Image 1 (cartoon, rainbow, N blue to C red):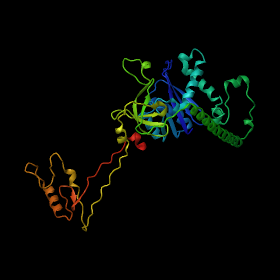
Image 2: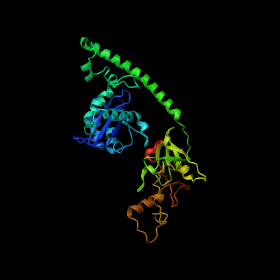
Image 3: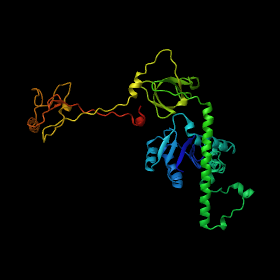
Image 4: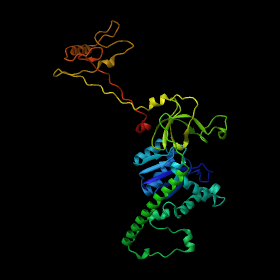
Length: 390
């Protein structure tokens, strides 16, 4: 239960209990799944169910993976993850394959509910626990075991076992220490076999995906089309009749081998997309993309050399150059014109002290005849992409 995935199904027909959504939570390793009918998809409701129903039973996971829904990206949900020390990860936009395990269960749950009876259309929330029980008792193709065996180390007694009978069990004749030892051995064996099966399943899935994948490697500044089919909305236009691709966009950089940062022009928002959503953009005329390289450069702050103070016991006062204003040309020192505000007694004493000091600082920002650069404010990239600046 260290890494889990969450997703929301719905909205669906409202039941007599006012439920319209299903919150799905699934463990990546054991494939154990829970499905909770919800009246709404608000972040507060989702967070309360995860804490009270999942965390209180199975403990807080190390990682929680979800899509970029507003309820999962809200401040309430982020606060919950911080309080429970959960590492929150997310999928790329409009790519359900990034959360394929829970999406696959959603499809399975829909099929099970569709085959129950006609009542599922208005009483589907009553059928969800039975559908989930059937899923947990089914051997998973990736692990080779049922989720019940992966979590409990044994198969639970199901209603069908009461009718057809169940093989005899010698658990009642065992002592508690013997039962604990055998249970631990069964779990260790099942988990080891499941790890091997999961590795083989991942390799098979990768080979099948690579057969139909023709990936193009993009460089910074390349022009690309961006797939917007089914996601772009234009007023007074039918979505199905809109073009499937939008562009040109320009590559700003990449987060890894599969995820890129793109932007249409300097005034638009930066997008983080999967390479499957992109394809090369071919233009008859050269495109202006110099701004891409300008924004992609890593800014390095310039170090200001420290002044060389040769006099013993000399002290450097604050840099008066920060008080200069180019518009007025006023230095703020004793050489003010007649229209300036007269200095106070304390300011007069400070000026006299500076004139008697071993370190002289004139109105041009020099110290002992050496130019002193003004302190530069260090720029930093946006927080979201700070770790991936090119």
